[in-house]
Image 1 (cartoon, one colour):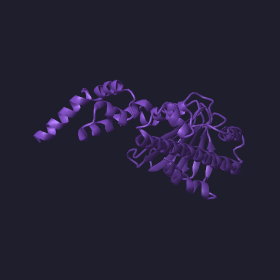
Image 2 (cartoon, rainbow, N blue to C red; image 1 turned 180 degrees about the vertical axis):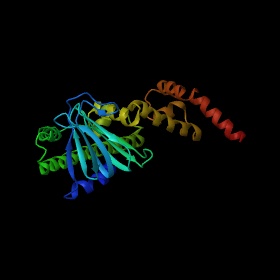
Image 3 (cartoon, helix red, strand yellow; image 1 turned 120 degrees about the horizontal axis):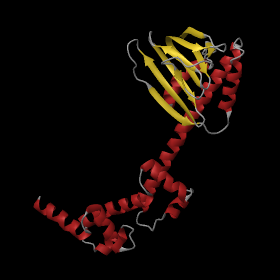
Image 4 (cartoon, rainbow, N blue to C red; image 1 turned 90 degrees about the horizontal axis):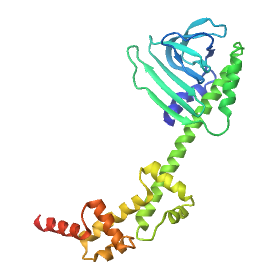
Length: 285
């Protein structure tokens, strides 16, 4: 997602004339049929091609403008716009909700929409974006100041890119930590592991450890630990003539009765039945 937005926005942000013209929609009269309207500010950007766009200006008059590559339309909360899908065009829309920032990439090839992309991220941290949105709202009444409008739109796009980049980095760090903890469990399953001991090994809180497993793996920590131990127990039952109690202890189960209950719950067989069935199949193969 970040790579997509980076490739789309880099030419706009790095080129001095990346934003060609900034238009402002209004919100005074009833919304026409089929027009777009939401309760949050939006930014519509034409990436390439051109598009006929209708909106209401600050005086309540309907404007119809042919937007070209680099043109942006700022639509305030409850404002509306009505795009006309005629010529081939690619547009990028940002929706600035109170808690979420969303984007939508649309590609109209002249006949149908193709390869649309969407995404969203939480609007956390400094209120930089809120201040720029407020400035654009005020600038709607001074539309001749295009240089300031272009500067603000570029700043808003850069802020959006930063939010999505931070989100991807956070997800990547969480996934890397989850993978490291899984590896730790797979190497130390013989030890008396607990939620507290595993969390302490990675300098995180026990609650965050549980949250990480549920979010990244869709499984509880103890459930995963039992899974690892039971898989190892199957290997020992297949290859060694160890007593059931010895298998349980070798796999980290202190209570052999608990081990037997968990094993039956997982395989619908007792450890002894599992061993006999495996060896019977092996001998008859």
